[in-house]
Amino acid sequence: MAGLRGHRGRRVLVEAQPRAPSRAGRPHRLSYGGTHLVIRLSREATALGAVACLAVLAGCTDNSKGDTGDARHVAVESSADACTLSAAEAPSGNLTFSVKNTGGDVTEFYLLAEDGLRIVGEVENIGPGLTRELVTSAVPGTYVTACKPGMRGTGIRADFTVSDSGEEVGPVGDTAAAVKKANANYKAYVQDQSAQLLEKTQKFVAAYKAGDDDQARRLYTDARVHWERIETVAESFGDLDPRMDAREADLEPGQKWTGWHRMEKDLWPHRAKGYTPLTPAQRATFADDLMKNTRTLDSRVQKLNFTVDQIANGSRGLLEEVATGKVTGEEEYWSRTDLYDFQANVDGARVAFDGLRAVVDKNDPELGKTIEGRFDALQTLLDQHRQGETGFVGYDKLTPEQVKDLSNAVTALSEPLSKLTAAVLK
Image 1 (cartoon, rainbow, N blue to C red):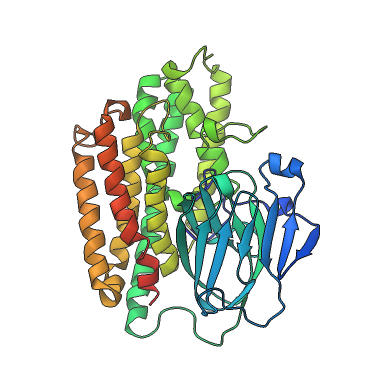
Image 2: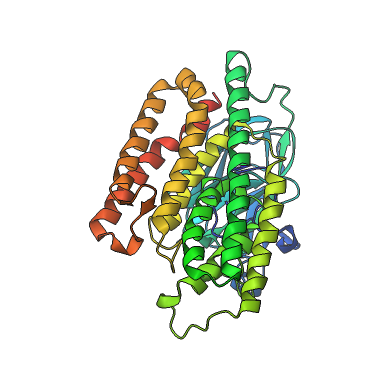
């Protein structure tokens, strides 16, 4: 989340975020063209994923208002080699970034804190030709914007300023009490899930290091669900997510593969041609590394606080996780346990939505009813694939028609859920 996404793009929250482009990769040479300030990179940098060009409106006027005439509405165009904003500054308050993908690959857009790591807001999974909005609340300060064409590499960045509007940022009046309660409840939920992740990862690691593969396979999904329920929070830590949750297909050149999915492949190697099992010493190295990073994650999560827009964006972000990884069957490539992750993402998204329901019902009751109905419809489909009380069939057991039904249900929910942040910030 913005304060609540990672190595695949995703990923909106309160700390360092994994997949967000690093500040070290920012270009230094500037060239001017028309009314836009354009930052260009070399072809070599483009080949490495640092993509070629970044444009933001030059500060020739005091307060550009973008295409809508609203100074808090910023139009963004993301292409294969550029990220163009209609303004480089906006007044504090509720900001809307309308992001249009004019390139040929799926893209993402981030609003990052001044350190270039902490996610303030993000919108993912923007297909070619589509426009999606990021709505977030921003206090005065210096920020960084970033487009990530192809959802890989370091992205295309620029500085962004939020000036002091003189207006109070955040909910007031009757809404403030409901928001305060929602923030406290979500914080407690995230802390609890993180604590359970830590406890169950310890059990998984012990079985894996001991060579008890059957037990480790059972414990793998049992622990992973707690990660998936707060995935947008976990992914916001840029130094941890790539070490803990990177998939083999997403590795950058030269990136060392560690974490859950490295051990997943070792436990379910049947889809790998010519695979050489890890030695006990290698197993111990990967297991200890995962345990160390999980402890670090938990210690950071316990200190987090959330805002209402972060919770709302996190709910939407978890559904995007489903759309980009789970419903495609790509997340758990080796174990085929994607439906466990699917359900856990839905769990986390629904908890976030339910916590905001009082605010939504006050500001847009029809939207609340629509979202609830579509959550229920998606859950009904998921329940059809259960195996036992808590398990699911392997993803490879689903027919193409069943996968399509799940995908359609996710899409149907994603549409109204994308309006949640705007509704709670009214």
